[in-house]
Length: 145
Image (cartoon, rainbow, N blue to C red; front, top):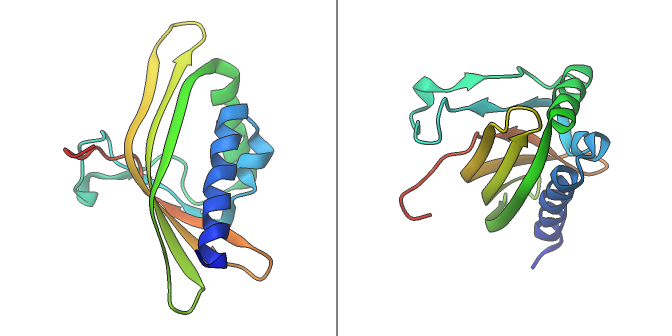
């Protein structure tokens, strides 16, 4: 395994730890300042013509408040993530990771379940000091999962 693949694996695992521990600062540490995160309305909406932006381009204050609100109002029942594939460019300056996730948040008051289950693609760019997550698809379900 080359060094870039190990570094991408580390950042995926760091993000997982951030969700597991509800650590907003750790979560924010993986994002590039130009990060964007389109979401399908449902996990079965594979057509990007139907996708939306929930948060817009990365804004530290807005994203910090959003994720902290999730952590304050929900508890994490489980968070299983499995890296299926990591691909690094020949130039060693870009990468993506395909990750299967099964993350279940339960609203503390209503009991409403917010279930993130399916496959995501996390796209990274190499910065001078480290890799950063610059784009991430929302969760999509596939028949073979």
